[in-house]
Length: 241
Image (cartoon, rainbow, N blue to C red; front, side, top):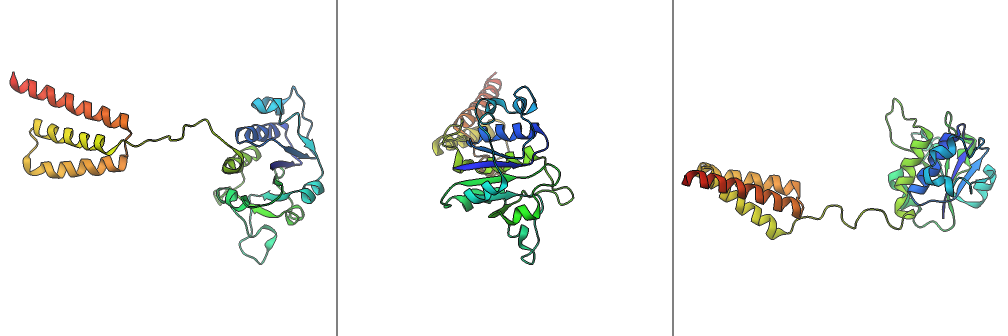
């Protein structure tokens, strides 16, 4: 069980945005510490999308101590310390590494986000188990609260989402015989356009390298083969005329 806590949020809209991100990435328990008023007709519900039906209405108001006492906690902060000399914000992990670090944790987990302007205080951070920070520009590393939560929860999807809307493979490579058929058709095309014989080997090698980097699908390979074939056939018919 991975829960999300928002401490002392200033704007209802950010709470709604976080609830929506939770819905997107398979989380359901939202904990609120000193929350703003969440009017069902206000911006929190307006920003929540389908999370207005379950996550927001079921959000629980708790104390910070409740979170510390009942969960393995992950504190999200924009600023980290540079070395162990000050360990309030050190060591830290990034969202990309967070899922692996939590995979073997026994018991419930809570990802804790702080206030829009100042985040979590040092006293609050000192009570939490793990520090997580999003790598960003050194000149402006502070993200909007809702944006930061979306990034962190996205990276946790391996632990929280059983299945996505995607097929098993988003990019199915063409089979080797189909790719070799394309190379053969390209070779015939070179001959049809009268490409110099001494340069054909170099052109074939160049085309093979380009195609190897492109990793085409079966449909792409078939389409390219058809285009080269049609071009070759038009050239050959023109020569016969």
